[in-house]
Length: 170
Image (cartoon, rainbow, N blue to C red):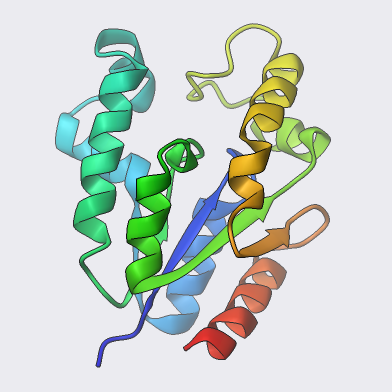
């Protein structure tokens, strides 16, 4: 039997992709970064997709990919921060794996994404945008069964905690 998936969800800048890489190195499981895969398939960056097609079109692409990936096993999935906006995404992923929400304070998120220009939802005052989006999505992230606060943790420490949970769940 194939290993259950590890699905990393959470707000931007909480460490999903970098932690996913550490987990992939440690487990030998394939890492699938949803945003990167959408970009590769569309031939556009996420900001370009938002600008030309709009956020609803991006969320549709994300939904289709979530359905596709949730049918696989033995993979690590790094999701986009807004994946939780559609509860069907989480429900599908929970069928074949362990969903872990990575969280961080608004200050930590700001420090991690301050110079990143590839975040289409952070136009204008990034601190204000981060605080508003985090507040809006807080109940969605809080609904995830497993949660790890990444403030002050290295990527390796975050991966350690996920692997401890995974050992208990598998």
